[in-house]
Length: 317
Image (cartoon, rainbow, N blue to C red; front, top):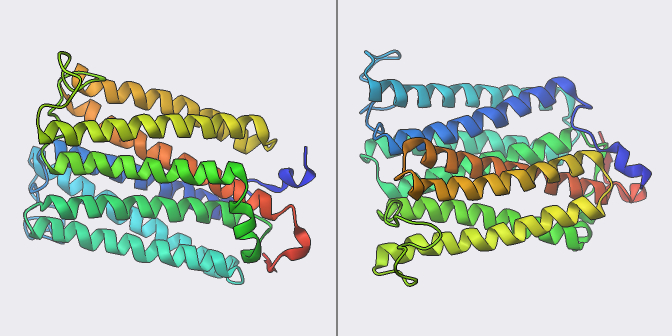
């Protein structure tokens, strides 16, 4: 085992790490709650923005409570990211890469909030909702990177390219890219009205191999992407599990395998349950968790590769 592998940890900066982890958890909750808002038809539970019926705490109905809760959790998320930014500035201001990622996170979460307001004011334009989901996932990307960087002893910009060129890094990047593309393709399918068009699994219709119309084709493209993503991400997880000796990376890789298999069952459960709300929300939530895990594994792996070359560090924390 490479002795440098032991340098990687997630709690060398405990307070900042906890705030960042809470931010990631709230972001995942926010995304899942946003999915619940969509499938429950609660998007206009608050018809105005940024207030709800002109009030901070509106009269509550079922749809109002869901939409207001979604907005409130977004405020909590933004506050946590602001606290993270302040802590980074106080404790890690010489880590320029970390300053960049945490400021980018703060700016991105503000953009997410503004897009959320545009969605309400545009009466739930589905195109804007897909953009909203993309930027929400971008927040997770930046938070995951920040969590790893804040606990690393060093980082070298000059070694990023060399680290990425290694086989396991390429597999992780490809898997992460496929996960986010597949996730967004599912959102696109919902936008086009194809989210619930296929009543069976794994085929769209049990009596036909080929999709019978354009909506079924859109849905099946999402399933084909899901199949490709499953194969590549499982390959990456198993490869990482066998080739790298770092304990944290091994644990996360093992978790990712379990999550991938769980996600397959959740995808199948949608048509099996006639697209119950819990199945649709869980499918989105699990995809977001899987995306988060792969981002953290990728970041840890790249840092691990860089820390094998201590003489070429650009700065120390």
